[in-house]
Length: 312
Image 1 (cartoon, one colour):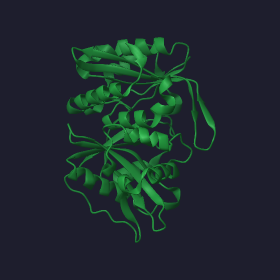
Image 2 (cartoon, rainbow, N blue to C red):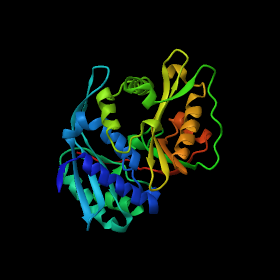
Image 3 (spheres, one colour):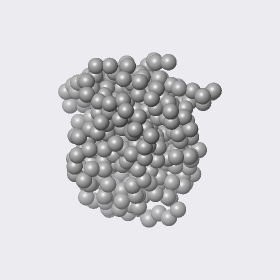
Image 4 (cartoon, helix red, strand yellow):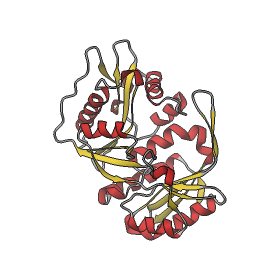
């Protein structure tokens, strides 16, 4: 069945993410993880949901595969400009016990986005899935795979032993629950620059059942500026916490704020029951900053995606 994506669908998709994480975590696709689903749905559905269609595949009562096609749309950015997205992108997941459904997912996407340029981000560890995408005419995206490309890697570490976070004098940790919505949004926008994120988008994020204000951490500068922020998504079933997104105000970089915030966040997550943490970043050689930050606090690459493209 094809229809517009709903909040109820996202809950089912998150539950599938938890089941795949439990058995083959390297097969959880980009944009298909427990936290990424909540973040992407929450921040965007109010403004862009009319262009989001999905299909779900079940085995009995269990969701075993899904596709979320993001079709052409106009996205208003916070600088007043409008970005026209002319192609189609697919986020998807197939449970490894039902790998053969990959062909049905691909056929559905091709039919849904017929005539459009199509992109998808399967995981490099999914050898069967990569073979099926190739069989349907999808090939490597040269721009996405270049030295400054957009491919991402997932990094992980355990939380058994953590360093004590250290902030510069006058800085302090806050939570979004303490700082309030306006401060939380400003922290993200200051870190990420031109973006579609708004207070309305944050209210959508806060409304997702997975969101916890006590696991949305910020660093406040002496002048009151929220200089860094990170949201953590706790998958209680797998005792895993996922950082998404993480950002630092450009005027406050190179001060150790990101490092301190990550360590502080992991400590809070461990207190909430997590034993393991993940965070994604751009993996191409031309994007070293975030990767070096995460490596510096003990994360190591566990898997990566492979940008694929099918021309219009």
